[in-house]
Length: 161
Image (cartoon, rainbow, N blue to C red; front, side, top):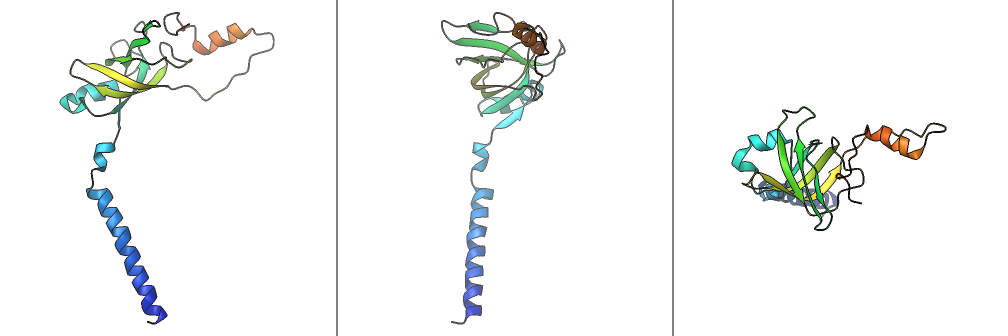
């Protein structure tokens, strides 16, 4: 076998393996492993399609909606599409302790499932936060600095003690 024939056979074999891999990806059940990312308005508009699959729901925590029960590690709140009062909102419940930055009005992404009772059961809660850092000004107390970051919207019910 000449080197040219051997190289062509290797090339044909590699193309067949690559084509088979692409076929498995294209025609396999890869769609069953997708996680959709929707806002509350998009998820509600999907109707029956939203019930069942794992979804990442992104929005802002609606002010006044946080209910935290530290005794039972139960968290319930609403995620809204935006900060306006008439924005579409979905009730989220979780049994995990919220992150330290969790509070009203902050952007969140929750991962879980939506059911027919219109409640989103979350098994993962992530907080969106700014990547901007502001060092405390000279003479500024740490408590004042923390409140300037949160715009004074931190509430006692928003965070477990």
